[in-house]
Length: 92
Image 1 (cartoon, rainbow, N blue to C red):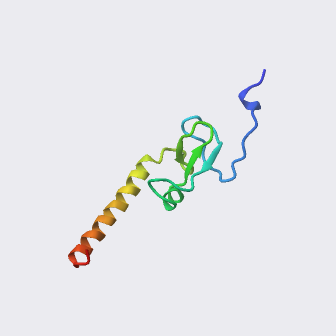
Image 2 (cartoon, rainbow, N blue to C red):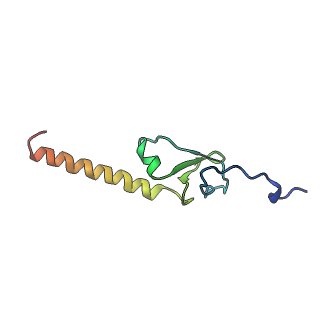
Image 3 (tube, helix red, strand yellow):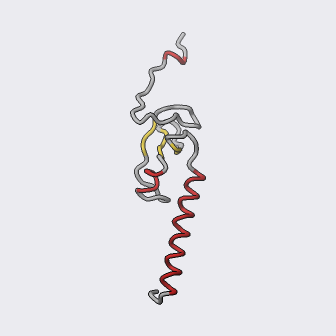
């Protein structure tokens, strides 16, 4: 009878945490997203589980939802301030 201890351990080259949804270590680094382009996933250590498809923070093993909301909100706020400043200067 095989036990869970007999399963081979997947290589973990980046030493990221397992998926919080299925507890597997089989992941792929996300290179680009609709919300963060190329920079966002790198800043948030965004990975995708190859087993269940859940995306999460590889360093913490938790969801990136709050960090994504903060990241996109910050970008939106900075953009609004820049547009407002340019309109005050008459450049828009």
